[in-house]
Amino acid sequence: MKPLIRLFFRTLRTVLGPFMLMFEALSRQKPVQRAVDSQAKVDQACGSLVLYHFKTCPFCIKVRKEMHRLALSIDKRDAQHDAKNKADLVAGSGDDKVPCLKVTDAHGQVQWIKDSSAIISYLNQRFGAAA
Image (cartoon, rainbow, N blue to C red; front, side, top):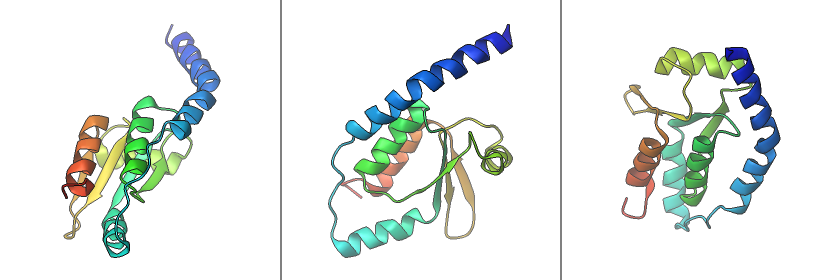
């Protein structure tokens, strides 16, 4: 029964995937505009962030749209088609749930944020208009 369910969802993802990616591109909001020096600081801060994602995961799309809106250049790693990225995700966070944001602080301490709403909240607190 499990293989049949997996086959169903894999087929569904294959058929709907291109439409989901097109919707992501068409529904993006305009990115925030920052001063050049301010954007440079944001880009530098984004160097300590890595997003593990699947291309057609609706929750990952939600996070990527927010990253675009906030004009964040966060490194994105495909954990679906790249075995090394998936292994890094499982080793660091404990499972292969996506989206997952890896946050490394100045002291080298790593924090893993696993829920899309928690990731978006973190990004808005750190890089939003009030930040």
